[in-house]
Length: 369
Image (cartoon, rainbow, N blue to C red; front, side, top):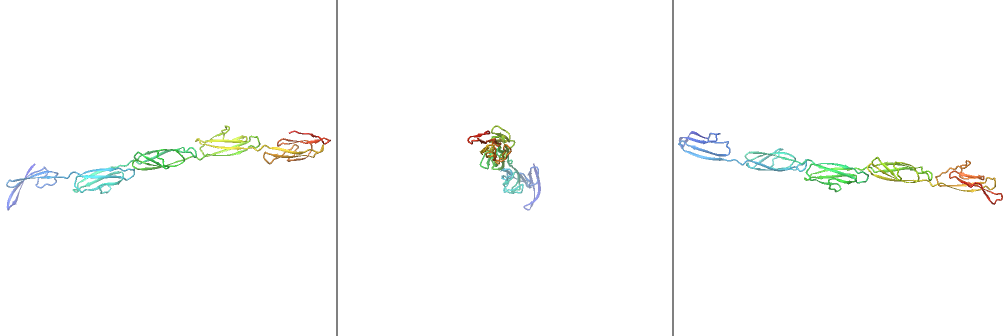
């Protein structure tokens, strides 16, 4: 709207009346203006003689500040590789920067995950605020299930590896050089894998594959006492492996221990709960058969007692004892009358020969065994 302002003032030594017609925006009604927004303002000045003059003034403003950013998120969970590249346009340079946390640089680097807010102030003290969120991937988690070696010294172990978190795809580096995710055909030992994700982040896991103690077969045995007998026995002891055990003997027996055995070699295969086997052979021996031999001297004179027997024993197991018919217990005999003497060790009979009166033809009295 338009308003008129009249006043008196001395001009060239003469007091004059002045009038000013103001074209106002409705907020101010005096000649000087402040607090103006951008725009064009026109004033018409009228003097006391009703002379007028008009002036237009344009108030400008700087372009509004615009804050833009590009950022790089953290590569590895828990890391501080994030960065923010801040660009400012508009306003009036130079600018100052105030970040949460106290930083005053335009750009930021070495940032952990989180939200970062910057307030930019230009040369006219105008401000603009921008917030940026730096993210990070979930932490890599390595889990495994494994199968231990079944038989001592075997290579039946395996590892099934599961990876979560990080950024796929993943690569795998095992001790020993393998690069597969899972492992099989493993012997007992500790296996370590380093998993690297697409961002170059790494995580390591170690797994120990065990094996049962090796099966050990020991035995104590009793040999056959008498040649041709079956008094032998085997007492078998098993340790290691995984119980229970099963037993398979040559000849078909399936018991752990054996008895009533004749001389020979007996082989047992022991199988544990994992199917592992161990074999042991035991030889049952027997003494050589006893052999009794003798040389004897016959009675010289009919009715006399000059006979003798020299007994030799081999085989069996010494020492020997002797039991003669009639009760004698010595190995050899002397002072014998004619007759048959039996040695019970082998039922050896010795015949004593008596001479006829003519001394030419002996008489066989007892040639039996």
